[in-house]
Length: 337
Image (cartoon, rainbow, N blue to C red):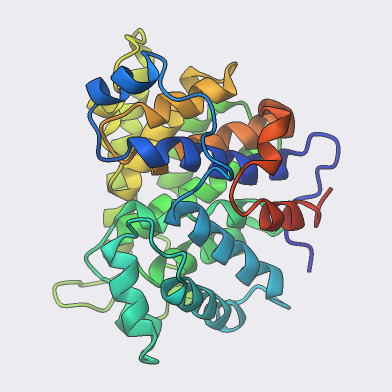
């Protein structure tokens, strides 16, 4: 199967994958720190240079690679085929000695349940909408598939660990944003396009991908279940619109669009950084890393968006060999270049 969209001229798919890893690496040392602490070390612009040999990433990139390889190995894109491949890759990640980058507890707990062989709808953490649902979904947005398949895959990979409807919706929107950019949409167009998608999909429950995930105490219908997630994403996008309509004060965007620990805020704040710095790709990463919130996830998603819009030319040429997992990133990029 061809994993990534074929874009040999622009290298947009490669730019998105590498951009995610670069943002993750820049945000890794700033996560859990205040903006004042970050600025004391890196200056008012935030971190703009990769550090280390190699420059280390976090579980954000590790899990994005797990998703990418599961998709790479899939002979067909259906829930029945892809779910066991995702499960295996997630469990390999959970057991890996490299899984020492402050991984999210939701992912660890869900993987522990998956390892018992439970159906994923029972293993998932049903109340979690953490950004682990969409920090890893970029590879889905790079697939040459129809939008229904893209949506199903995005929600499935999220649902294995994060069963909250907002995690599902935000993951679909994140993958859809990458797809739009690969296809030539401008970064500034994304808030409106994503808002339109959220309205269109608000009552769409993808039972062929999600099964009986919605059937929980207190839920009356599958439509009401999924609408809660889309409504939260719509509120996050409305905050993004308001933030972009005001002048940029250069301060922490988390004050405007959320700290990014939860899925819809990670999407909105990463989009803010990407749109505000669309002409300065490294600046978009630095803006995400210079936040008081989930800096690595915000910067990683900002990198995925800017890289999808600008291609590999967005990034310093020497970074490609200095980033951790460079061999895997290169192998995945080679499937489309």
